Picture 1: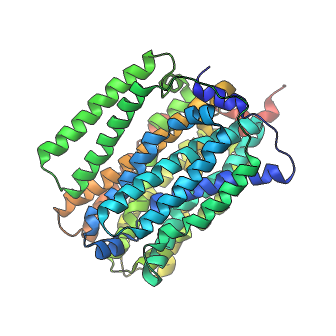
Picture 2: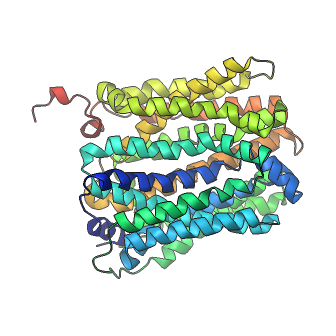
Picture 3: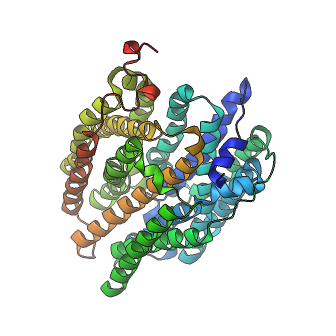
Length: 480
C-alpha cells in the first residue's frame, strides 16, 4: 500500500450532526487562506515595492516563490499523514502557516519576505492535499459534488476577494496586515481540526521517495524561478535559457522516473484516466492558464494603465466574487441538466471571448459597465472551473483518491505558476522592460483569450456520458 492510499484508508469515518458541517468548514478555512495569500499581494505590490524600495515589476517573485513552495511541498502530505497522523500534520501545517504569515508582516527587506512566503507555501501545501483527502474519504461520492462546490467557493474567493482585501488594507492600513489577518483564522482552524479530524490508528512506515522528491522539486523550482527571471528581466538571457532548459530536462527525467518506480512521489499513471486527462491536463490546463492571468493582469492594468488606487482596483475586481458565488449554488443543477460535455463545449468559447474582451476596457467607461462585465466574467469563469474540477475526479477509484489529490493540486498550481509567469514575461516583453502601457495589456488579454479558446479542442473529445455518475446527468434514462 502506498503512502497516499493508506492515508485514505486510515481516515475513513462518518461524521455526524454538527461535526459533519464543521469538518468541511474547517477544510474550507485552509483552502481559503492558501488561495487568498496566492492572490492578496497582487494589488499590494506597488505598496510593498515602495516600502521595500523595489519596483513592482520585480516583485513577481513574491507570487512565484509561494506557488513554487506549494508545488514542491504538496507530495509530502500523504506520506507525512501516514507517518505522523492526519490530524497532527494538518494542525502542524496551520501553525506553520500562521507563523509564516507573522514573519511576512514583520519583513524589513525583500529576501526575508521571499523566505517567509516560501514557508507559507509549505504550510498551505499540506493543508490543500490533506484537506481534500479527508473530504473525499469521509463522504460518499454522490455527496462530494455539492460539498466540493461549497469548499471550492473558499478557493475561488481567494482570487476574487484577494485584490479587494489587499487593496483596502494597503491603502488604509499597511500592506503588512494582508498577512497578519491569517493568524486568527489559522489558529481557530487548528483548534477545530484538533477536535474533528481523526487521529492516526497506526503509523505506516512507507519509504519516502526521496529521489522523486529531488527531481520533481528541483525541476518545478527551476521552472518557476526561470519564468520569474524572464518576467523581471533581471538576469542574462543565457542564464534564463539555462534555467528553463534545465527545468524541462529535469521534469522529463522525473516523469519517466515516476512512471517506472513502484511507489512514486507522483502517480502519473492516473493521467491514463481519460476524464482526468481531458478535464485538466489537455483542456483544463489551458483554460486555467488563460483565466488565472486575469487575476494578475486586471488589477495591474487598472492601477498602472488607468491610474486607479489599489482599493479602487480591488473594489472593481471584487464584483466577480458575487457572480462566482451565485453560480456555484446553481452548478449541481446545471451539470445535472446538461452534463459536463455540453457545459464545457458551450462555455469555453464564451469565457475565452470574455478574457479577450478586457482589451476593450477604457478608463472613460462608466463604472457600472466595468462592474457588469467583471460580474459576467466571474459567472462564466466559475462555470468553467466548477465543471473541470468535478469532472477530473469522476472516474477516480476510492483507493486512488490520495494519489489523485496530490497530483491534481500540483498540476493546478503548476498551471497557475505558468499563467502568472507567462503573463508577466509577455507583459515585460511588450513593455520593452519599461512601464507597461494600456495597449500592452490589451494585446496580452487577446493572447490569453486565444489560449483559453484552445481548450475547446480537448473538451470536444468528451462524451455525454462522461462524469454522469457524479453530475446525475441522464439518470432518468438509466434503469439502475
